[in-house]
Amino acid sequence: MKILASSGTKGGVGKSTFAILLAFKLSKEKKVVFCDCDVECPNDYLILGEKLKNPEPIYQKFPTLDKEKCKKCGLCSEVCKEHAIFWVKEKYPFFIYDLCTGCGTCWLVCPNKAIKTKKKIVGGIYKNKINDNFYLITGLSKAGISETGPIVREVKERAIKFAKEKNADYLIIDTAPGTHCSVIQALLNIDKVYAVTEPTPLGSHDLGLILELAKKLKISTEIVLNKANVGNKKEIEEIAKKFGTNISIEIPYSEELINAYCNKKLEKMVKLI
Image (cartoon, rainbow, N blue to C red; front, side):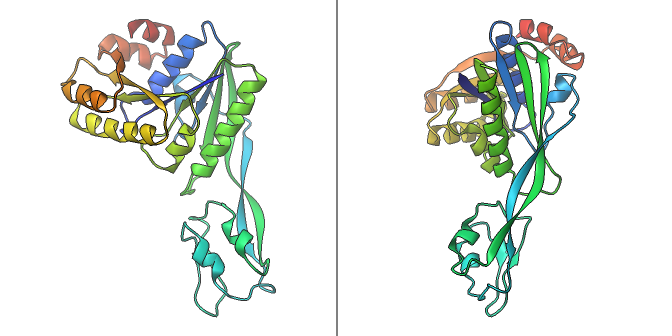
């Protein structure tokens, strides 16, 4: 099974649309599982005309304090890389759950075993069958979760398991825009990432960021240039040359393509690009 991803630092360049069309085209001959890992704002189900129902809960462990065992040493606060534990000398530590990722470091290092864990639902996973060869997995975090990297990791792991159960040929991942932790979690250990951008100064700048991230993660890359006939693509070509990659797909801007998008005519969109 090949694991591919569609990603890009700048929002609004057509990253999700390209990912859906890639999955749709491949599903004509192969079995595809498509995973929306933009858990803070998933929208692929909308483009596909689906509804999100019957979620499978995503749980995360959070620390809780046993004051009878706590000696107020403050070690938990020292090791917390997210600064999610506030501690004042001779006082009990205070957990800031909005910053906690549930990494477990605090309860592992506590010399008095004073930190226990409690499970909390932080999101959900939804499954939709588009057709016999095309399945959609959607991850959605609960509102107010500030660090969604662990949620993306869980969504991706379950998507991989589901894809293997279905004997899928491809798992295609649509990441969130940007280069933050949730994007990194989505891109870890994949076979190829399609970096989607547009021929604008901001598009070229942000393309450099995602290609730099892919280089650090040692992921094969190809560039998808959307709205290729609008603006100047020279800067995009220079960025591509700098990172030793290619502009493999150029998608033109056209009203016909926009109309097909608005009417969810995926078959027509694939033909137009």
